[in-house]
Structures are given as structure tokens and as C-alpha cells.
Length: 235
Image (cartoon, rainbow, N blue to C red; front, side):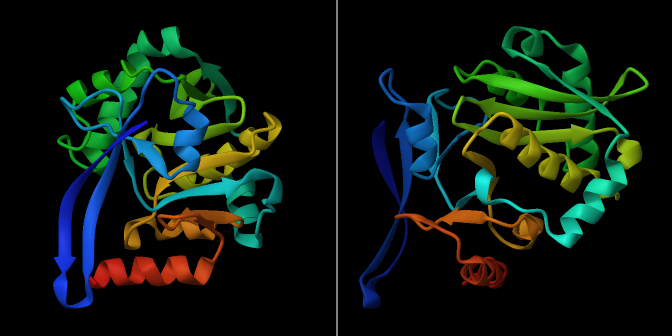
């Protein structure tokens, strides 16, 4: 991976100089290594399709995961309601139902500017091992989870679900079920994106969560929660 650095901020009195770290994936790069080094795929519109960024990403050590009592409560709430299957790369890229639900969900939940159609098309065109887990009820799609999936790991990238399930815990259930699916596939890690501020605090409810410190993966849950609290304070 070819690295590039851009100045972000500094505090000269303490000799603290901040730089963002980006990486351009090259033909010989192993995707699992890039993820293990704290990189995630960049997905903004009109960016290099091979661009990755280093961040405070989080992952679950799948073999070490044991559901908490709260996890079990959420799992019981939705278990056995849906059928789960997979849409692999070519079929996923051709799926109109996936596009409709993804764009509708994001427009309602986060705003249309967050996931415009051109951004979704760029994501689907990435040279990544993409698939979607599709959850159906009475034969109709209720939810999709877009994943990057290799033998040793999977990345829970984006999820969407029918608007009738908004303000329920279905989103958390989808993530917990992704941990179970990763275990069933004998994957070592499930990557869950980033953990900044209060909006990502729900991820800390998953046991065996690790975060990328910039140098290594840490399982210090208290430290992660403190970092997220400082994010909200602008520290």
C-alpha cells in the first residue's frame, strides 16, 4: 500500500503534529493486511477507487465473542423472524431492490446527501470482494448488510432496512447477527467501521471489541469510551 500524509492539525508547544494517513491499494497488497493495519476503504464520490484511510476502526475478535445479556435480549427480539441469504458480487451490482432500499433508508435516516445514488454506484464498482446479506420476511427483502468478505475476515460496511423498523433495535440485531455469521464462516475478525463520538457508542455494547490505536489493536473498553467522550467535547 502506497501511503500519503496530509497535515491536519498541530500543537507546537507540545511538539504534537497531526497528519491524516491515506493508503492507495496496489496490486500486490493483501486486503486482510490493510484492514489489520487500521485501514478502511474510502467511499466519497469521485475519489480514487483504491483509496483507503487510517482511522480509529473497530473490530470483533470473533472467537472470543460471547453475547452479553443485553445482546441476548436483542437477539431474541428478532431471531427466527427473517430468512438470511447472500447476494454475491455480480448479482448485487445488478440488484434494483438493494439500491432502492439502501437509498430510501439513507435519505430518511441520514439525509439524501449522505448516500446519493452516485456514491452508491461508486461503492458497488469498487474492486473489492463485495456481497450483501439479505434478510427477507414472507419472501420480501426487509434488510441488507453490505459487506467486504474474504476467508479470514469480513467488514460490515453499510446496512439498511425497511422504514417500518426504524426506532427499533433491528440495526443492532443485524450487527450482532453479523458476528454470528462471521463465526459460522470461521472468520477471525469482523470489522465494524469507526468509533468516534456518541453516534458510535452502541458498538461498545459488543463484547470482545477492539479498536485501532494508530499502532496496535486494543481491547481496553474503558479507554475507547473515554476517547469517544473526548470526541464529543472536541478535545
